[in-house]
Image (tube, rainbow, N blue to C red; front, side, top):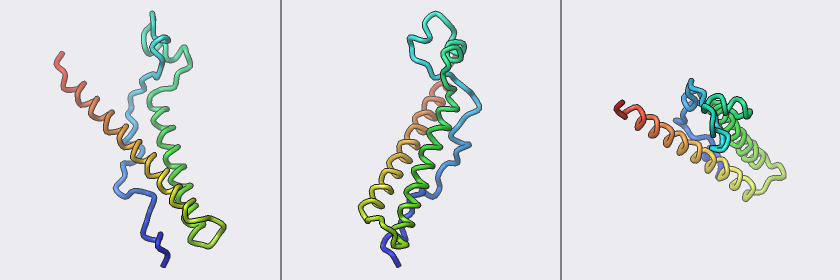
Length: 120
């Protein structure tokens, strides 16, 4: 049994990608692009990506990094030309990117809850 066999770069209990993205599509634009126009129109006119697209890209990048780390560990376990430091670095990069994604999601949920609790 390999010393890395019990280590999984993929976190169990992870939030599905569908839960990370909301149905709302808010534009992502620089403040200078929004001057003098409505936010939605400025984001679309400037070719800005929607918020859901940005989150989807982030989830895809994290998933690709997780897959890369898994392939690196599998290559190490099968005796291919992969060193232990390469495998550990790949796993840590995937772990850090996953933690960043979770923190972004947590901040977004906190912001959403705060906005929803505001009185009109």
